Each structure stands twice: as C-alpha cells, then as structure tokens.
Figure 1 (tube, one colour):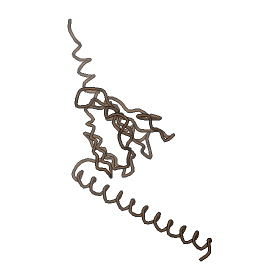
Figure 2 (figure 1 turned 120 degrees about the horizontal axis):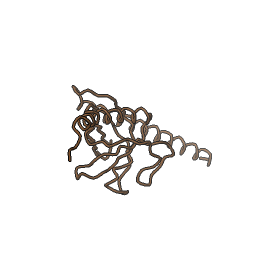
Figure 3 (figure 1 turned 90 degrees about the vertical axis):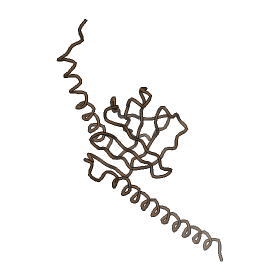
Figure 4 (figure 1 turned 90 degrees about the horizontal axis):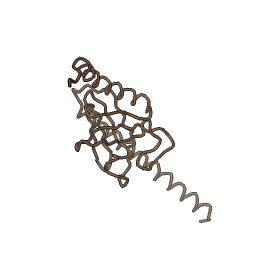
Length: 165
C-alpha cells in the first residue's frame, strides 16, 4: 500500500470518527434539552435555549468547567443545566440585581458579548454568572424588564411611605 493510500485511509477514518462524534453531541444536546424542558411542563416558559455556554459563577472562582447546556427562563427564575457534567444553576428573579453585556467573565472570553446576570446569592453577597447565548440582547432585555417589574412595586411603596425621622 502506497503512502498516499495510507494518508487517504487515515483521513477517511478521521472523517468518520468526527461525524460520529458530532452526531453523538447533537443527540446528547437534544436528549438533555428534552429532559430539562419536561421539568417545566405546566410552568410558563418565557424563553429557552438548548445551547447556552456557561462561563461560571463568580463566587466559585476561576477553576470551574465551562460548558454547554440548557437555559430556561420562567416567570420566577432563570434556570440552567449543563449537559455534562450535570451542573445546575437557578437564579430567582427576586434575587436578580441587574444584567450586563460582558466581554469576559472569570478571565475567559470568546470575543463575543456574554449575558451576565448579577444577583444576590444565598449568603447575601453580590455574585454573578455569565453565558454565551445566541441573542444576548434579547435575553438581557427580557431579564432586565423582569427585574424592573419586580422593583416597581417596591419603589412605589417607598415613594408612598417615605422614611420618617
């Protein structure tokens, strides 16, 4: 067998393995998206994507794995579940402070804007998570309007009942 035949055989085997790997990843994405979305049957889902890339939670530091997963926005929270390893993040709207278009998060960047959600964590500290999603601005606007709607009654109460000295 000539050297060209070996090269072509190797390239053919590589192409088959690559196609099989990509097919596996697509099936994994579909299966995990279906599993996660089934949990929200009956809930009012405002938005969802099966291809959100998680950049980590600020309070957990730089050593976290970045990974793809499913993001679901409901009336009360932003939910995220990584495909593998399975990791879940839930940020209640009641704890969200603001959203940002970030260029990087925890020292990582992909030269595209990231959706960054700043929130109050379980310890009462300011924390944040960031994701690469297809339409950052749409996600940011949806979350920002939910944060503003939650604050509106609080601000109206404060205006109606100013502090007394």
